[in-house]
Image (cartoon, rainbow, N blue to C red; front, side, top):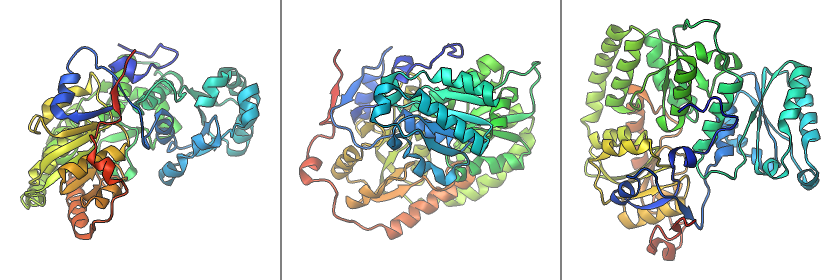
Length: 463
């Protein structure tokens, strides 16, 4: 089903029955998510997690020739301090005060846009909604219609409000829906250009380089979308020959809508992680672009190098807890397994009606291992680590220091090449270095909490 004609994007909970709260075993999770609807749970206490607004900021803050205005209190834009290290756009806040929340803030938004456009001269302005705006019901669209005509510039409203969803991925869907309807242009004819859309919402430049370097060797042109793109790159995304996503959990909605509404082929691949995932990815992309022979030469060349690394079994006899998106987990589990590890548990951000299919790809993992579903929630992860005592905690996130406090070796995959063949070498190197420099510290969490059931605060939602 396409959502292109809808004025607003609905939440992942309504669209995919997405759950963001779970604490139990792998077997319990599979059983609870096996029906036509996944029953929602709630956390009566929640610790540091991403939301739809921070996800939207992160995916837009790196677009060239763009300005992002977070329409709300100053704190709503604070996450840009994190994203700004790789950002090319400028993020502003309308800095709403108590008076604005009572009387409305349309005039303040109007003034902010006018001043920013005159000073910065961007090609596109993105306005991100916040809880305050959702409460006072600002007429943002009237401001947009007036100023688009006045300045002859594209202004796009991102309908995030911070209330309706528990899944940060909904923020990515809202961004995708907004650029589909308001920025991507429909070509005059059905002809496609010979380039590939690489859909990326949260990956770093360094992690993406593991794939783009391989495409460069195959002489396949690509357009990053929306992260690290430009206004022109987003506009032209509808003319691409095909699209591919680096994380299906994040980018599949945009790829599907581009295929259904713009005729851009969606190449459904495995996550390009490890030897098997990268090889499968390359072969599928190369086939679409007529580069099969070149791809096979590249695959053979890299397989020989990687076999030497894998056979060293740097995780032989070690227990590992993995923390990754569910679509990336199978290939990450395969890689760590080939390095000799036993998967002792894992954590994912969400589970939904679509991505639960990835459970079949990790059937080799014991059904009794502990599983946490949720963004952040490091206190719950600490609780599990204290009980199962794995040797390593390997995470796509940068927040891994709490594991060291419990005597578990932390490995963050955030700031390294994660995808492609180069990613194998980087991941192995990170594991080796973490083992050398890790020290056990005193735990941040009370012994009383570590003894409790990890699902103490996760309850069945009642209606």
